[in-house]
Length: 326
Image (cartoon, rainbow, N blue to C red; front, side, top):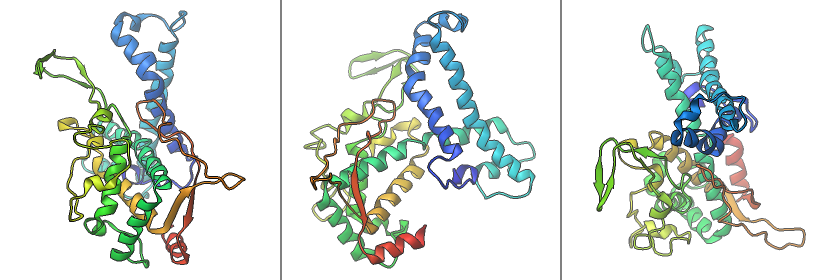
């Protein structure tokens, strides 16, 4: 929101965040099944009236379209109004609006809207998966903290310039992206021309789904794939030995927001490990509350179901760093 619209989100129930989550929820939870797929298979259904019995998918599609339109339009108008009034934070939309005397507003809305929606749940999924992994693997947390303390110290938070000097933290980031990819089946793609792959004929226009979940669980590449093992990304000298992050997709249609997503998730991981300890939460009797690492939603974007864990500041110095960076 800050990069695209110059808008600072300050609370969990922010109106624009809520709008993005509703729009994305409509897309991934229902539209992919109730509307898009049904009308693609049976295109004549596009012409039936909404009042007919059994046409609920079409009514839903219209409601979803309204939500998606608001998600695209409302934050754009927020920026445009700020520009007209002579104030507002610098952002991509304002730069594009000022880039010519006659900017194509529809293109700008679409570009910003896609970036706005794409970040709503994907980064959240990875950050929650990281949190669960750390609560379950305290030894990994300690290894990261030793590395951070050695390279960064305890007087400041890690910054991007530290990234190459923190290979174990980098390995944790890459293992999170492998262990629980946010979009397990990637996004559907359409074949431009007839093709043949390993003896299979794929006709022009066919839908192809990249099974990222299966790729990240290839035992020949990732032994014991269900285990959370950052060391799989390190060589004998402790350097990163695998630069591939399958979660962002492939080829010309690779995720265009991967740089933002990569930076966001890495910074969250590095800074959280610098100042927090992670552990399983305990019940009233003092027994650890288990986390089910397989309990995820089955939508387009896979989110962990609610879980409990303990996150506490490491020290007084950590509390100071947290306070000074808010």
